[in-house]
Length: 117
Image 1: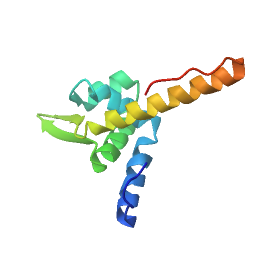
Image 2: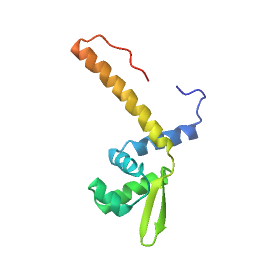
Image 3: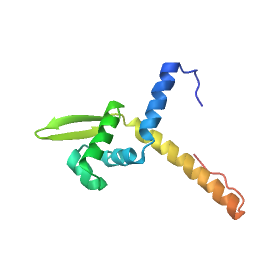
Image 4: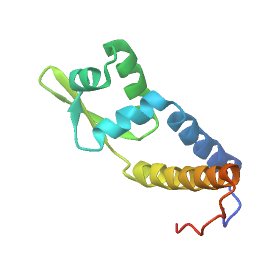
């Protein structure tokens, strides 16, 4: 729960961050970068994507401050610039897992068990 009231500017920034993370392909890119810096070509290959699409999403992630980029020779390398994004994803995943467990238990008639956070 949000402790302090957010300013309109802060709400806009938070909403922008969530919109950026609301695209599954961008989450896949971030997941690939979790293990370390990668060139665009390596991301294209590992994501089975095409270069223009991957580059478009990398630009959006870069503009949002989630990834950094640097040139090395003819390659552009991308890396995570805000590792907090993984903590956010972990929190959402745990929340969704709890929700799914409750829904399954409700459907199966099983008594709900306490789930630890």
